[in-house]
Figure 1 (tube, rainbow, N blue to C red):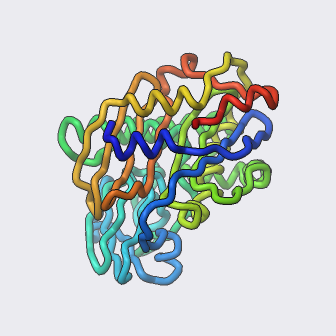
Figure 2: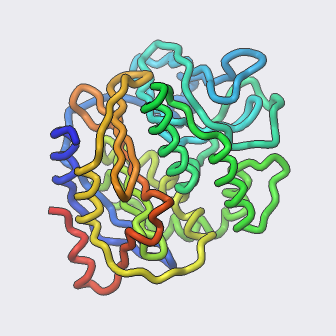
Figure 3: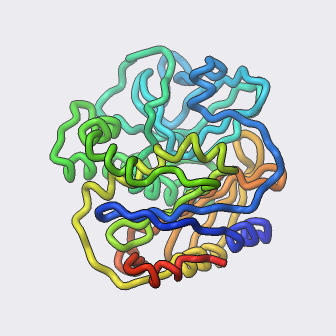
Length: 326
């Protein structure tokens, strides 16, 4: 792993663990970085500074057109869902879209049963793809970059994860839209959001469901992270709601982060500013967007095939002390 990223991860601090039902969240704080200015996608859309549409009138599933009219970059976060146009999509990777620019951005479909216009432009769905969808997508995008240097997902796998989400929830969606799963569980998801409030200085999370580390997310700083905290919590909570309780042995967060620092690494030019780093190890798969020596967004997900190999259990206060990473 690149020394910049390794040092960054090994200097993470944790804040008090929070627990609710079968889900635990450990807040993360990372070292301060240079002062960079950029907008979140949600804010840019609210201020009418960015427009996202189909690439042309006919459209194509894996691509959208983004026009940034702002005088600063806009962060399009991996997994953010856009709704409207010919079908709902999620972003395949994090992109720091250059100011006053136009780019084609890679996406995956999250609404299998629709291919007809609802609107000319996309809107923010207020959701990220669920953590299970995002981890499947992350693994297939890594594979695509390695083999073709393209940010493509396995669309069939994304759709299958969404089908399983609907099956577990017992709810139907006429178009197979992931957004409908969030809507059907809105009341329960609100309980998780209330249970995991943003903590002072926090700019990341590690999430544990049924005793297993499911993923880690870190944003550039506390201010930028605060735009995404509830979306991130919901993306994991949706999966926590629909999983049966399990019991597992303990596996420290310190060890989880250590395995990340030993990952195989590859880097690719980002579609916007910076470099897109891709990682893989025995336990997890992940990515990191780096621009001018600054870590903009990092995400790691537990590999689905090792569901029983990397458990983490929060128990007593003394056990929680093991979750310190420095």
